[in-house]
Length: 152
Image (tube, rainbow, N blue to C red; front, side, top):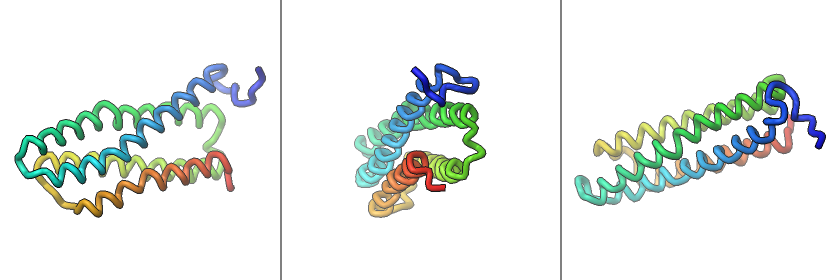
C-alpha cells in the first residue's frame, strides 16, 4: 500500500495516530456537548439536595474520565500529526489551530464553571447554558471544513 502521508517520523504508524486523533476528538466533543446539558439539569435541582449531589458526581466523572483525558490525547496525537506532515506551514492549519485553541479555552471555561456550580454558584441561566452547548458543534463544523476542503 502506498500512502504519501506515511512519511516523517511516524512512518507506518501515521494512519494509526490519525485514527486515534479522530477517535479522541469524537470523545472530547461528545463530552463537551454533554457537560453544559448536565449543568442545565444540575441547576434545576434544589440546592443541597441529593439530586444536586448526583449531578456534581456525574459532572466530575465526565470531566475526569472522558473530557480532559480526551482533550490531552487530541492535542498529543494532533501535534504529532501536524509535525509529521509539516502542517505548520499551511494556512488552513493555522486557522484550524486557532479554532482548536479557542475550543480548548472553552473547555477550560466549562470545566471551571462546573467547579463553581459544584460549590453552589449558579451564574448562568439554563438558556445561556443551552446556547453555550452550541459552541462545540460550530467549532467542529469549522475544523472539518478546514481539514477536508482546505479553503486556503
